[in-house]
Image (cartoon, rainbow, N blue to C red; front, side, top):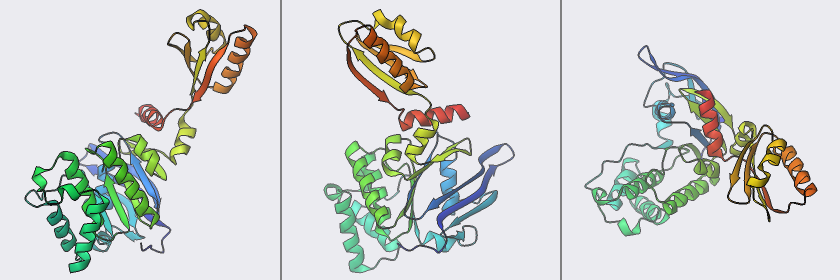
Length: 318
């Protein structure tokens, strides 16, 4: 993959998009994407994700602000940028009368890939995306998941330095989803940069090097997946199970220890305790249980998932 001398593959500064007087789709957002990284762009529906992609792929003009791709201003070098990027949008492909093989071949032809090289590339993509069984099937006979798999696969026909993926796994079963994510990871190892949107937090955590969370046109959080969980997760959950005595019988004692915590009885012998100072609370609980000769079956402290953190961030910022 070729890289510009510019430090960032994508650089956005105070980007704004207005529709009329009352609709602000993007409210002066700024971020950078490094070369050879997967950048996750997360947010609820209508947050501004697709608008951002349309601007960065030169399909939509911003109201104000600047955006550079490969170090070049997107408003001045649109054609040059388009030659080096790939885009998988949420819009379905329209080659209904073509077989999968023919659609891939035609896409390669449109990108100027010649003869034998194009044929080899089509075969490679069919193998990589497990499309052998539907190779000669027409697009309008495919399932929704199969159509999506072909739509994503065809973008890898041509050489590119930057790939925009707008919720690429929608409609895919778990096996196809994991295959796609692993394929993307391997391409990134070869230098590809990826701009990735998804509603599935497990995907973001598995694939992305950095994440930005956008809500109502504003970026409200930016960090690595682990960094976001550490920075924005205030509470940890203590899962505690005891022996020979019911949880309800010692609930009053637990309440006196975990004063500012949310306490839930979990089954006959268990507790789930949502606590801000989980380690201190747990230490006091263990001391009290030991003092009262109450046996402990198991203890586990669980941090919030990325999905829980995402929901907390978005809800707090609404």
